[in-house]
Image (cartoon, helix red, strand yellow):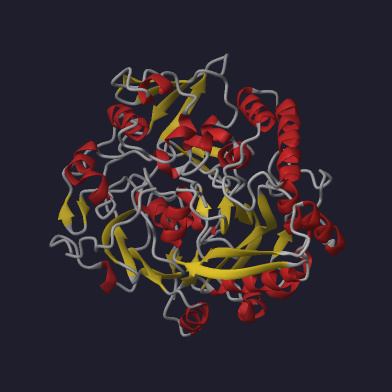
Length: 558
């Protein structure tokens, strides 16, 4: 989330904002700020967790959000049928259980009873009135998300559902493969067995929505009046300043002792783009959690009790636009860039060792990853120069790199700028804000730009198919415009293969093509960390990354 989770990496270790998995450009306006007369302001409570985040979210409507900065908030407000446990396995959420047919093409979900939509949003009563969620809501939600008029950027994640193509082509007014069995039973039929199907359903794009409120506010305003079933409700959004959520007193979940959840009265996400200021605010006790620890404070942060760090299924890269010169039809040039950088030196010197060198798409831990796949793109300056000459640039080349504004991205860009210059590649730098970069990437307007991706679901399909299959060129995730027939065949076949060993081999072959063709400048795979104050209890970094953390059982014990 993900998803440019397109999606693509803000909660990650080195990125201010990354795509993730599960867009429309957020309007420059403020959400409702009036407090409910029935409920005291969450901001006045001492039981509020305050977190410093590095960027203003792009969109709080899960149907259109594709980045991790937005997903962080969405995970508190909305809920899906299934979720992930701490090890990345699918577990029940709003579906208590499910059955799968022998042919793996029919899923029957048994819905949790007593789940209600939020009663208020931005201090005002919701149109749905806090009613119970039933199978009818799920049928409507999926039809809304998959409707071509809705134009959700992640709708195609479910293109295997029966009737998807006819619905997209407007040959029918509903999607055939989604139906209500009874009020608490939902059936989904798919055209072919798809191994990561349940994992896809955990993507926050596919959260249940109240039809009344979606239709009242419309696509533009639901972003500023998000209504879900989650443990926290939306109160207000001051652009580039903060987002405030309050406790959902009607939440369905209780702890093991029968106590009502969540424990917190609310959450406040403060936008602080300066990492030194984030650290200062944390040290002063003005915030309870920070998203990113800047390198100068890393050693000190690691010594703190509230610090957690693990590898993450995510990749940091620079995108070559294969539909524009100079990278179009010039594999030698793209490979020259990849041999011209010293990834280990970059990570050790600029990133404090907080990453793993990347010479391909798939991160460690994802099926199909194999460090022995060639080429490995070790640092080889002479080979880079030879490839540059083969590419038609014996005297070097000048290019512009566009990156989204942040100290972290700037430091990386400047370090790589210096390394590339040694090979005869003269890189000028331009920074723009995150939304502008995503908009330009969607439209394939920039020849060379920064991007990052964290898994929407922990499967190679979410990397290789979503980011590089030609069916997804542009806003769907393939920002490089990569178009390779053999690669498409392999990734399409892997989607319908249910034998894990065969799937693994197909993805290894696809990964080998991606490495050889070099649609990206592969840089590093992320590690992910979380830092909270010592008095923040039950804060456990999730498998999918810190940005997916849910604060349902978090406590403050000052």
